Image (cartoon, rainbow, N blue to C red):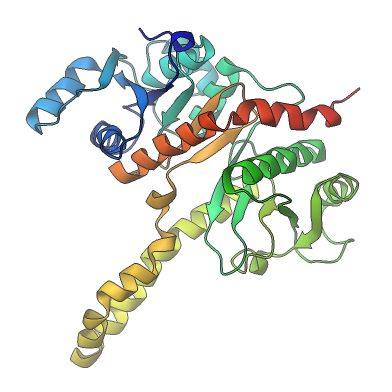
Length: 342
């Protein structure tokens, strides 16, 4: 097996059994990454017989991929802590252990979000001064580049956790998108300082007294306007927001189809502009952005949605490679030092 200390290239552990379309999307996505010219080493973790059988049936070349036999799979209903002990040979646990043991730099998985986040946290460990890691998602907007943190890593959070999320998100946005002083907004039920529950009010004070570029409270209507670069909320709210956003493209398609069925002329008009509409809605396609980063762990983990396509998997691998190139884990840990609890 590759010793990452002896190689200059990024080594990625790919969980080939986690997604809804596994292992098809994972194998094809890894191949797309190679075909794009990406110089990485990829360990593909999964049932070796199933992987090789699928590749043979679909005439997929496994050249450049190193298969690591992982016969067990962590399902949607498995509890992460129990699964680490009961399913040590699962693709997810073995992948996280490769990063922990410094045999890989990054883990890429389209498995259950909570399981990937928990297993990564428990096995790789947290960075110093991080109590709860966070996952963030890119949100298309009409204004500034926008991310929402947190979108589901943990749902029960303290104000101090949300402050650390804002710090991690600010460094991530600065390094990955070259935005020197990203703006931070706190998602609330109103813009006024006195609005919100106890958690949000206390978080407001922490953010206001930090060195971050905090612009104050923002409302849900401000997200798609791109009022700020980083929207901060707890994982309960953020995950609902993310899942709602993911439903929008299908709903728009439903409305267009419903309109087209009214009469033949509307059907013809929509048909004529189908390609244009598809291009216009491309920013809403989550596959373009790959997965979401889990920030605050001692390693790199990219989490994709369960229905990730090969293109999404490829972009997850690209994102992991970019985080490795920019030494993001070290920079995140350095940024948190001034906020250490004494």
